[in-house]
Length: 293
Image (cartoon, rainbow, N blue to C red; front, side, top):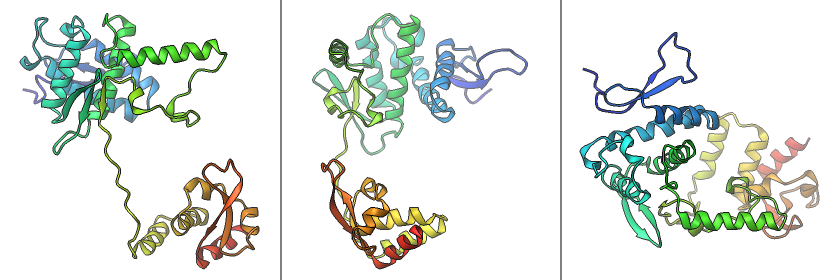
């Protein structure tokens, strides 16, 4: 008996069969699961091969869970019954899975759920929620799920639609994604996700280890870094400047300070004006001279 019996899994498409699918998702009985197979193909078109594979694999345990008695409802078990559930029932199923199977915490907050990690929590929860949201987006477009995407906060979605309409009315371009870096980031409360991971508090760690410079030099040489990359890292460490401030340095910025151990650069908020002076070691200055020459 196959050890995966009872679990959703991916199997290669049979040799000699003409199909656009490289893999087929099958359920615990070995029957093809069309929705997940189509989802795998769709993700392969828009994501890298590794990311698409991860999105599919992280959903398989959840679909196995849907077939279990733990997720039973008045509609029955499995995805075939989940399409009939209201968004709140789907959210309850996801909440239970995240708490019981992924060992996370969940609490209701202003119309959405905050997911908190604790010791022993699965590291895949972020990917799982992103993948499931993508799956329901496909299900809504394909007509497999009649209601709105249950992984989306409807209030935030409406606010974003209103913002988009106001931009169009004013003749402005649509808002660019956060990844583009050209838009002012929205606050956490403006997320469209119904399930939102609790932000971990960032505690700055000062680089006061006296042995760090030696390890940096050894690491860069061992990795075979070029002279330019070594200069960038050394300048950032020795001067405390931002990486972007170092990367945007020109030969003129160095010559303006006498071709020695200083260079002029811009500062945050200076709009490109060279108002800041950074200082670095004589060894880094020697490397800069060698690089320029």
